[in-house]
Length: 97
Image (cartoon, rainbow, N blue to C red; front, side, top):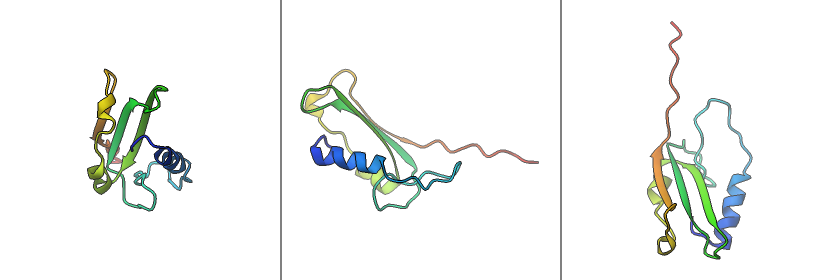
């Protein structure tokens, strides 16, 4: 998720993508065109290249797309810089017995 005009527009488009999610169903990968189940959450926080403050982006991704993620804008890293990929927490199954 590089900080470019096209990248920001794609991020907004992705965030505005209609949600076909059923409550309590596993989330779908955030990448456009991918229908795989999301298994990771990626969080990035970095300074915008224009110097207008911090940018924070979070996306749930399938394993394949999470593998493609990497830190960006390291030359402008600062104390609150974040790049983190974590597994999504599985909902606890309730014992109905």
